[in-house]
Length: 304
Image (cartoon, rainbow, N blue to C red; front, side, top):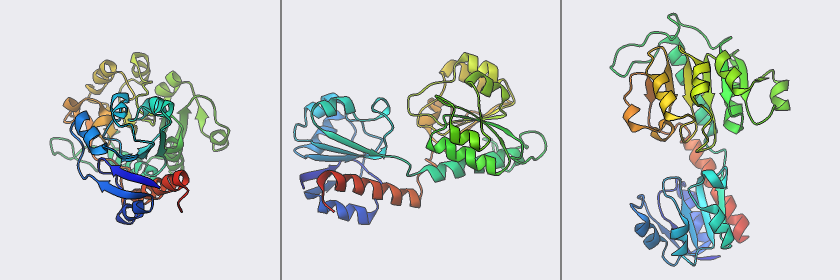
């Protein structure tokens, strides 16, 4: 059992999970706002030996050096790799600090977002940023059936999106580190990235944070009159070629957050559709997140 557990920012834990935290620590402290600077982060952690945080605050080496009591950091957000995390995991591990994260808690909402926005685009159900009724993407309403869809990154979310699009009859191409046997069995076609960009009407990027694969060559291959989705947490592209591409009025980008867009000045761009609301945050996602965070704490402390 911990002496003191501090949630240094809003974590998304449901109320029953917040109550369960008292099973793991003698003292539990919650903060309901995001700390404004490193000094405030250190102040909130204080003498705590366990810390919970979401994705909006970064725990650097310098912060951890000022918080010597910390032995456990629970990330109430996705953890895919040390490089993409908002905690200096390598330094933490060097100091014997356990860092636990979670995965696959908001994927269903992201899939629904992609299908919903794509249908609205293809049928002309949406309104443009200036408030006018949008025209169907291809001039006349069309189904997803036989649409050429390229998935860049066939991880858990990318695979779920591919399955959903395939259900509606889309042709699925994908690029990943290597060809996947289960995808092959489903009829999904593995392509090199440049070929995927060329063949696809719709490209969906589902990459880890800070992974950039779309450079000038990829946008040249993609060309115009295309639809681009980014469901990652950061831009999947180099800024300059992307901004050149999005300035063509036959192209359109969909993303659910400013982080995925990468440039707040483009939020109101005529060809950008960014809700700036995380599509993966649903009631069910909060339930799954809470269950996984509590499981990690239970595994570490051996408290059931």
